[in-house]
Image (cartoon, rainbow, N blue to C red):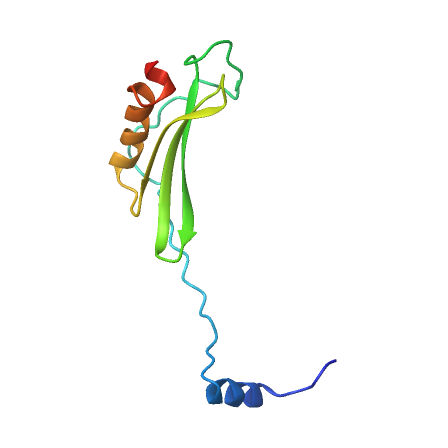
Length: 114
């Protein structure tokens, strides 16, 4: 069933019932590709196969929207087992986030130390 109503009527009814439109949040860039920092070489060259554990790892950072804001997740994956061997989470994205994920992979907690 369709009912034709005008924008002003919808606005008035929303106001009467305490309903507000959800505002879109402004996009915030999290990556700065225009920097003078050195870029590490691509050693894998898209070869994502490994013959044994701890031969090749890859790492990435992703962000997950939550009710409390963004949750940043850094993970290190062993390409042989396809298991996460190191991870770290934070409400911000400092260098420490990636370092903790790598330390976990190398240390006793991750498969990399076993």
